[in-house]
Image (cartoon, rainbow, N blue to C red; front, side, top):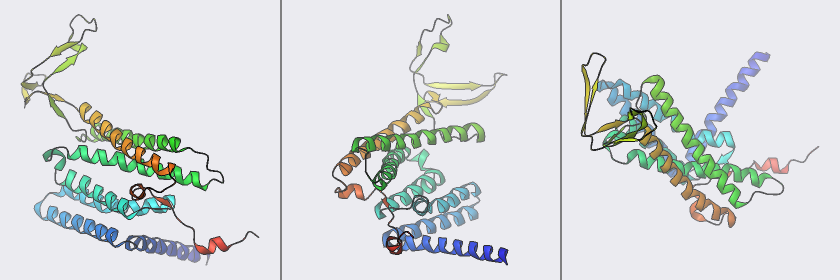
Length: 287
């Protein structure tokens, strides 16, 4: 009997979870429409890849579908309400990064695609970090955190997320032999390793037109036209700089938002708000 009741309770919890999820999705028409479009696009792309034999791309379609639930999971985990504008941007970001960036190879074929997404990521992560600290600050009986402190924490939160993502890219490239850290062609190399005297002198090699890669036996493995291949370093630094600019932009907006206690209409579209408890909880009195 006890096991039956536990199973029934667990089933009811799952049912209420799914009910709350779709209730939140349907709460705003534009958000629900964006979510449905994302699911339809992921399904259509998966079927297309299945019939054309591009099975490796199906994984990106499945990941896109799963990540579309990210806004709701954030709301459930932190008991906050995401503005409709922020939800739509998050869904669009998932679509642009996974479906278009990885699945459709936009990262390789569309200039500045990766840069734009990293800039947006820094902006959004600063908004989320700002909201989390601000919500905790407001729940205190005496809010003691200054707007400047909130701004610094939000900025640091966004930069931390950016750094962790670069760690993840490096890990995937090193362990699974991927190329998430995209390479750049450069025509100049400066290195102390080229100094035969071992006196820590920087040797500069300029105007590189071609790089020939040889194996131990002297066989040509590959010929890189246009210069020397920078492996991931420039991409990583570029991503962090763009994340920095995005975080800095929202931190500036968020500072004045808190300074004037939430009067900024633009910032409200990106800052999650604390979820209001049910009315019956307000009416309960301690026994």
